[in-house]
Image (cartoon, rainbow, N blue to C red; front, side, top):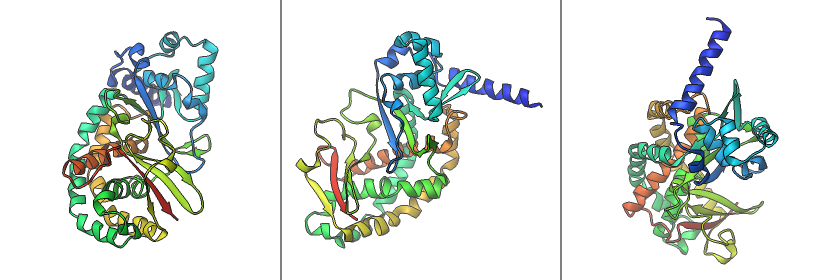
Length: 335
């Protein structure tokens, strides 16, 4: 089989995935009227180019995900030819799109509402296994809490959302998921390393897209880190003004326990659960049509967010975690 034949076969598979797997019957008007969130996983100056925040760029990505042509998108959005080319060229330059024989494929994770809800349902068995494993070590986490300075002010229950969701599954663990399970660096885009996703939001729910729990840093210097954790971070005006909020303060002594003992307590169990389910993760990667578009790592890091969100909800339902009424948790950590 010569190189040209192989290239044609690959191109056909990608076109088939673009037009069939994602069911391109959804109208661009429907996409335009939907609400999307852009999410990223990054450190320091590793941030997306500003092109990603321009008007209707999310619509462009989602329409391409559904197999729409650039001409259809251009017509529906009222973009001029030179503007479309300018945007697409910049997105390709920033490794957010790829051009396969004139077909533009998003290389970032795109998750519309219908597909995302199905994928979230797929995560439940693994999420439940993770939740059960956390319940099995709750007594150990309480012992570590009692060693911290913050225990003099707050009970374990008051901090359980931060400990069992953020430290055991998200902020304290995401680096381990990347280095021990994915074993790859974050994607390189225009000299920056970061993961990027465009997710559709259910506007009937007062929470972020798919209810995903996440962190947002508000202050980071040589001595302290201030952040907000939850799934309603951006819903209220002034959400980022932590000075007028209740902030839970962890000392430097607490920092060492959080990131050297608490997250390590669950790390082997979590990685083992992910490893034994890797075949299923790869099967879903193919089934949902991401093969040939984005890397497995880019898909999985966001699927993992769905998994640990459902694990968190499981623990909340079982009264193991006490979720703040506001849906967010402000914290300060001394380094």
